Image 1 (cartoon, rainbow, N blue to C red):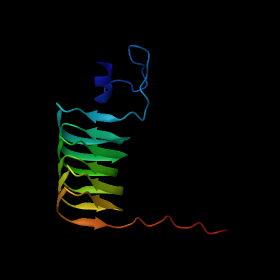
Image 2: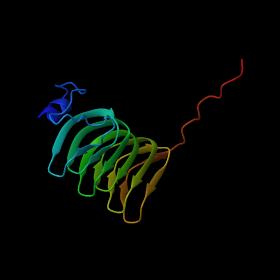
Image 3: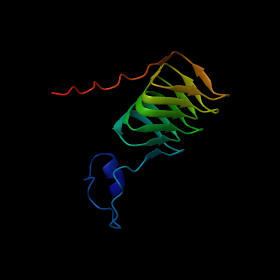
Image 4: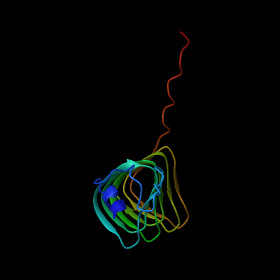
Length: 139
């Protein structure tokens, strides 16, 4: 119960679980196969969607869409890997990978893009390397 309250932001994230174990801050978030979520999700770390998600996802981390997942969302993340069905606009800092079982309908903006044989992609692909940080000049 405490984990659900923490997920909803209603309990202290640093409070120990009933068994005295505090989950690590970098633990992955999983939307299970029988779960459907609508709304906006923002956060850090890795997220895996195995069920359904509709809305917007903004992650400072990686997003993995499982083979049986369906995501109707605009997504911004460091890396996006699609094995299921995604409809929406994707923006990735480093790369977007569409696996053989993956299907994407939407616009992709990323530093790197790859679609495996068998993948379905419908939309625009914008691949542009990020500008390197400005070099420090000696004083």
